[in-house]
View 1 (cartoon, helix red, strand yellow):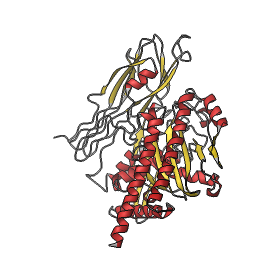
View 2: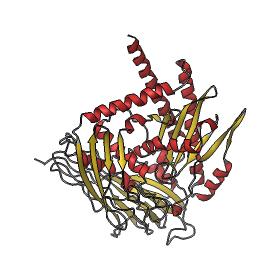
View 3: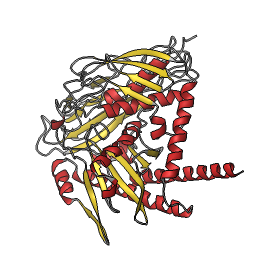
Length: 529
């Protein structure tokens, strides 16, 4: 009876902890300035014990943010030891190799206190619209060209008996180096706010239950999740299975290779044989590679087990140094999700042989980020052209599943939603003439793949605008069908006048012309009868 009561209390505390991080994420959604955070949900939020281990994450968010943030907090604590932190402190970085993989994502960490005693940490991440440099493009050949790098530092400094002091020098540098200073400033303050709300909710929760610390509950969460993940792995066949995938790449096609090993210790994924790092900004830093690899494994092996330090510990990843999945500084990395978001699909391919009949077909993978800009800086524009810098999200189709069709225009594995066209139109003179299913884009099969989207955009002013195609892939290498299913259709980007925009460069859409982007469809599953 005592054990049952203890288990019930733990379950209640777990549910309350999830409620805290969900509120944390929702505060960020409601306070963010940038539409990619506010509308598309490109963010993450989580709670950590005093050792910096992730205990729980908000459901709202992307695996690329959540799973990189799981290890990012430890990097902060290496630079700011626990005993040096005070109430009111907030730490920040956008380091691609110790954060979430590129300069556009800021990670903030806030220590939580109860009666001046440290009880844990809250971390949050979001994508900002601009970080200076070349912008959201893949043309850069080093990270130094890609924008402003903020090393681990204090964003806010706690003061005894006084409000925390904001790092105005950092804000001044940021606002002087980005194209949308108010949006970037607002998003970073939104990160501060969501963490601060969460620290208050956690302290109130512990007081309500008569607790003075979080670490005891944290140890139970981590250890039980670890054991549950191990139990799930023990049900799998033992052995090593390999797969490969071709992607369009930038200056040359990219080959991804993976060998997945299931053993008594857990699951290991080795990317030996994958292409070397690109000269351009499509490389996936190891932290981002780890994040999406772990996510792919967990989707197949144990989707219902909480995602935290314990369950993540069972999946390990290795990759050759300075490969496309483990680039070394100062490689360019802005469009890292071209590679990183394909890795769950590659993991699924590895599982196909040992788990026949249980693995979906390939999907579009990487979402298409349409970086749209206009103004006098665009080639061919007149001085009076409206200056704008906006983002829209193009989403392809998911692969068909063993028992049902693939989901259409659904961003797997990122989970990011589309930004409503009304938002983009309100921020720019652009007009979306079409946003609809790309009919015929899904691979046929016993179960058809998901459809991609087709988007058509024009400028309502008599002025050109530019489109950055940094993240557009699967225009030459389709999502493959499985078990006899057909491949999905490849994507394509053209102008209404007929010109094809073939690569990942930035192109100019002339005044009076329209941009047409057709997203790739998902592969089919099984032979069509």
